Length: 399
Image (cartoon, rainbow, N blue to C red; front, side, top):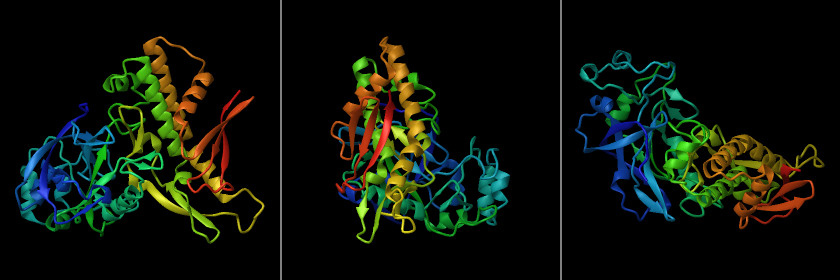
């Protein structure tokens, strides 16, 4: 499958240091060990590019290749580079202008090259401290390390007990001469830690609702065409995979639970990342979490020390995690089901259809079992440790 999007040419440079995901240590992937910069960043390097490569713009500071780069578990994946620069300033919606960038540069040679540049849409990496640990338009080593640790927690290259991830394969460090100049471009606060790029593998550039030219939530028909969902049977399978992987997103804490044997348990939670914009969709309907830097290891008391008879803090966390992404998840499912019925002329009762699909999706799930009562359908949520006292019941459908 060829991906769609706005094309961008990136120039490849040699990196002084590369860190590799343990799952990919034996793979020879030279294209994933290079630094990629847009043409507007050429003045910052004293050496010529090794070569150039065609990408598609993916969100604000990332790019993805249009054709597959690797196959994992019979699924095509595409090279995705995070940290290629931004086209707009951190405190403006206006495009970057050469004069604005040159106002930060004290090197006359670099400034002259920038002013002579004829790049139609300039894109720059900057040293402005942005978010929690990232330079604006680029990527910081702290965030990349978090993403790598999460990726290496997986039980396979793309799964944490059913929670599917778009794996970070390499952390690629910027050349020192370029990083030194970039770090001087800042408006208020300077990023003072190492800068890197993340080399990731993604199954597509289609997001759930935001940060894509076409998303599942607002262009469902286009997504069906792109993924060649041309029969009702394919649509049903797509829905089942969507629900299976989506339920894993809602129960990530339970799927990563660890007993600390001191009255606490730890597990993965989400920090400043969201299902609607930070996950991508594969052609078979599976949701893959892409922005792994937002997966955070947290520790929770088994019981509230101040109120031991209250609801378990672990149960509270499990419930909160479900509600955090539930609306986006159900909204997207509803769009898929509407498109399936419209496209193939098959109309079914909403709740009956959802129950059937959910049963198929969770048939062999590691954590969730379904329990049907006369007036409702419940999720019985366990955990990968099999600890029966750490469970949660949650109603998915009321009748």
